Length: 442
Ligand SMILES: NC(=O)c1ccc[n+]([C@@H]2O[C@H](COP(=O)([O-])OP(=O)(O)OC[C@H]3O[C@@H](n4cnc5c(N)ncnc54)[C@H](O)[C@@H]3O)[C@@H](O)[C@H]2O)c1
Image 1 (tube, rainbow, N blue to C red):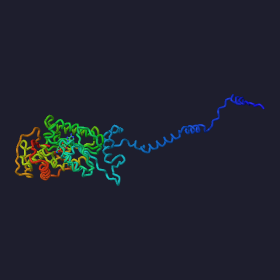
Image 2: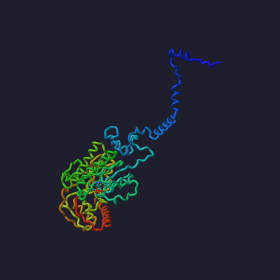
Image 3: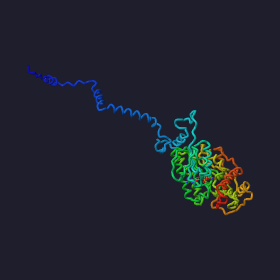
């Protein structure tokens, strides 16, 4: 039997002549997707992708983005925070720094948690006033960073803190910018005695203007509170006596002392402009003549001069007729005032000084009584622009800071004398340095 080719195509052909859509298989698309995934290990890639995504979201939770930039970041903050009034912004920053942040609107510290010590920078912290301030802050449990270029400061003033983990010392000139993460800035860096600030007047005014700008910029950037140590010299040769903070002063803008006087006046202006314009929390202290241990021995300030001269058996040099007056504040009183001002709620300016008024001749007598009753007094012509009278009105500080000096001149002077005696007869040979200038102001 021959093979029989049976052609059935015509049947199909017939059927296809009339249009009928292809029946849709219900699982066709799913099976096609599954087949696609199984081909060439695509399933493996999908599983690896899921694993990576899970890992990323576990390590960097989404909540982080919602909290905004971290306040302790070293990048500029204000640019990255959405707008709200700058004053509120900086208050928030300062409050946040102190642990009263957004997560803790009541400002209360949760039970079981102690408030951490503050991180504080003290510019000029190796100097006379700065080093005493550092002692108090460290004793309170704060972490202190001293920034100093050692122009008039000395490592010896702070070396008893070396090795303390709460203490750091940076050799730095405030005329150059500096970035530090801190809660408070005490800005003291500036030569304070006429002999030093007249040594390089351009540098003095630069320190006051550029140095203060840099420190205010830092305060703004990191949300720190800023305290400026200004001076009674902003009153110049005052026509009002005693001087109140509301007095605008009588300053010679082109005299030999103006690098300091006008420098500090500009520093006050900058401080207020950063406060008003950028919402930085600021404090201003106007310091009157202060004395105590660790003062520079030959800095031309009247108390240190008289004490050093009496110890060296040299005559006490009085400039002019010796009737110009000054008030003398012991350093521990000043430090207490500065800390109260920083912690308080008032911007200032505040006079910080001892209202007890002495003529130069009376001061010379107290030094004679304390050190050497036979010490001689020598009169010399007065220096240019030396103010005739200086006495603080401290009623504002009394009322708003609850502060007033406690240590009288007769109590404080012996404490300074023992430090000077030790430094003159220990570190220096007697008579190895002679006092060439004297000035009755700070
Ligand atoms: N002692 C006073 O009677 C008196 C009175 C009025 C105002 N003040 C002010 O108090 C502050 C401290 O005065 P002080 O008596 O301790 O003087 P000080 O000279 O002992 O201390 C000043 C410190 O600032 C440092 N310094 C100076 N220029 C600097 C710079 N460009 N960069 C970094 N550090 C710099 C010095 O090295 C020093 O350690 C000063 O701002 C001063 O104007 C003091």
